[in-house]
Image (tube, rainbow, N blue to C red):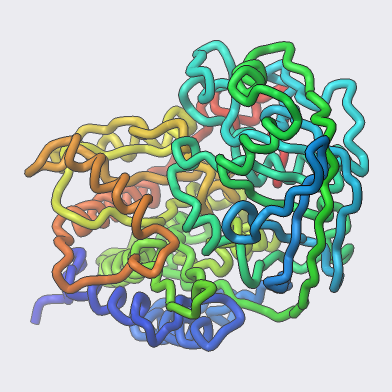
Length: 523
């Protein structure tokens, strides 16, 4: 009898995806019955494949989390020359606090427009220069000056920099001593609408448990709709368009708005342990060196109405892809020279909590991890003629991608929407910040049957109407031809990384390179 095939199997992929994206798993939110079902399912699958426990004798790595739930009575108001304006929670504004305290408030906090809220010495940029924001609330734009002005001489030009991430902005404002931080939502810059903001940022919020109870964070953080943000400028007698353009030019100085912010949150707090699920396929000659595949198993749970948010593409299909790759490698004879690690992280939807914990407490040495390959929001559809590397130009791993793509007759291209900064949105970022070459590669938008415009329209439709919403459901009608081809690509990349004696390096101009004069700040 011939040995079992190591080919990527669509039936296996569907069989893993179907339960993970079902209502029975309740949106896979950490700390719920949905987590218990998910972790049990993944553990059983790894055992069935004959993979070894990744954390000593266990498949699990406990991750201490804290859940902070803001009551629906959350309030934010702005006082100006025309009186006090109350913003509607969920309609105009979403606010939260990372501080582990039952009640958080702002009173008469001066509002300051601080542009993009960036301090980047290597770009000679400081939006907080000569500005004392202690006790104040900063109002910030999304993105960075390069993407906003499409100026190739600023930051990374049309490619969003790490400084454009909203999590960086929130953390930097806290480092500056701000009491409050409000971000103006812009769907064109972020790539998703207000409904996704509400579903992600209302209700229970998760954080890594901290000894200081996150006292170093601003008391109030939040999003404003674009309309509500512009209205604040009008209330202050300021011109939004001229100031937003000025904020993207060198020499911008923050503008006090003459408005006072008041806010109140009543929070309930729960601490619990969640789990990263880790499995190991021991390698051959270099078994103490590792190639790591990862995906985050968690979803958003339920929305405010109680409807399940199944997260079929974000990121149930990534986890199903992880399990499909695990089966393929487990059947490979002989095994790869380096060991292969498969990790399903918790807390990916809440700013990479599981992977951030892992790189702080690595089960396998990071200096012996040759690369991390992230599977997040896999392509659903037919074959594409291209492959997109998110964060192109960062590391030598891209040469492995190019070679594997050529074997499939596909072209390697940079991200079609570089202003969205998609490299920074998932677990690969945690590894990149710790010096491990990290890869986030996806199918391109040049659909083999319908062309690039059609493919780009499909992506835009998903982000606008299904991402982080109840409509992100699995369907038996899905065309998975392109999905399977992508998994074959990921497998070939991992095989090449495992069998090549050299470790891939960061490219000299990468923002993650050790040659950088200024290290990247971690959020």
